[in-house]
Image (cartoon, rainbow, N blue to C red; front, side, top):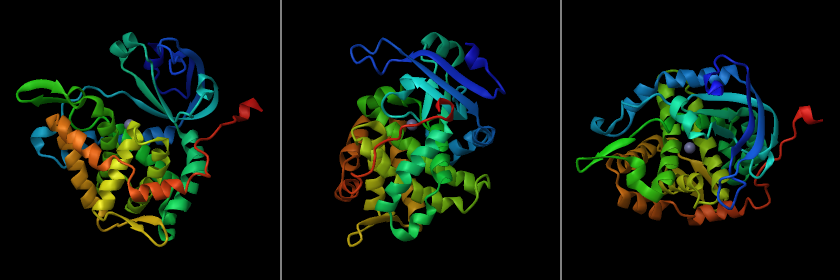
Amino acid sequence: MAWMDLKDHTIEVVIGPYEVYEDALFNYKAAFECFLTLVDPEETQKLKQFASYLNDMEKNLPIPDEYKNFERGSESPIMVVQEVFGAGDTKAGVQTLAFNLPNDERVRKAKGSKKVMLKNLHEAKYEKLLKPIAEIVLDKEQLKYVTFDGFFTHTLMHEMSHGIGPGFIKVDGRETEVKKELKETYSKIEECKADILGMFNNMCMIKNGVLPKEFENEMWVTFLAGTFRSVRFGISEAHGGGNAIIYNYLLENGAYEFNKETQKVKVNFDKIYSILTDLANKVLMIQAKGDYQGSLDLIAKYGIESETMKILVDKLSSLPVDIKPEFEIEK
Ligand SMILES: [Zn+2]
C-alpha cells in the first residue's frame, strides 16, 4: 500500500516474494526478488506529457466516434527508472524490461498497480540485440534511422496505448468487455493494437509538436527492425504474434518492401502512415465489435511466419537471444 503511495521519490525499490513464474507446478509459490532502481526524471516527464494528450489520442483514432472510449478510469501510473542492482528471481531467464506490481489483488483493488520501466536494460538490449539485428535485416540506406530513442519512445507509447481504444463494449445490446468476447485471441490482438497505436499515437505527438518531425522516419524504421527481435521469441506468443500481423499486413500492402536480391527489408515512407491507419481501423473495429471470428481470421491470415520473415529470421541464428547484466555494485 505504501509503495503505491510513493510520490516524487528518487529511489524505486522492490524487495520480496512476488512473481510465481518459477513455480511450474501450480504458479502459486512466489520467489524472492530485488530491484534497486533510480527514477529517471526526464523520461518520466515525457510520459506525463504524453498522458496529458490521452483524450486527444482517443479522439484521433481512425474509427467512428460512437466506438471511442472516453470513460476510462484512472490508469495505472508508469515510471521510468535506471536499474542499479537486481537479485534473486530477477536474474532467472529472460531479462525483464519492465515490471508491473503489486500482484496482490487486495492492494490492486485499493490502489491499482504501478508499471516500472527499466531504461538501462532497454539500452543494453538495444545495443546488443536490436542494432546487430538491424544490420542484418535492414536495407543499408535506412540503417541511419535506427535509434535508441526510436526504440524507447515506441515502448513508452506502446504502454500508454494499452489504455486507449475500446474496453467495455456493447454487443447486440449486451454489456460486455473486449477481453471476454475475443477470448484466447485477446492478448495477441491487444499487443498488436498497442504496437500499432504506439506508432500511430507518436504521429499524433509529432503533429502536436510534442515530438520533432525528424522522429518520424526513426520510429518507422526502428520498429521494423524491432519486429525481428520480438518474433524470435515465437509468433505463438502474444508480442511476437502481434508483430507478425503488422509485418505481413504492411508488406502485403507495400508499406514494407523486401528486396529479393539483397534479402533486406525497408520502409516505404510514402505509404506507411496510410496503410498503418487501415490496419489500426481493422484491429480497433474487431475490438469495438467484440468480433471473435474477425480476430481469428486476422490472426490466421497475417499472424504467421511468412516466407520473407522466415528468410530474415534464419539469418539471425548467430546472434544471442538475450543479455545477462552485471551491475557496478556487484564488482
Ligand atoms: Zn503490451
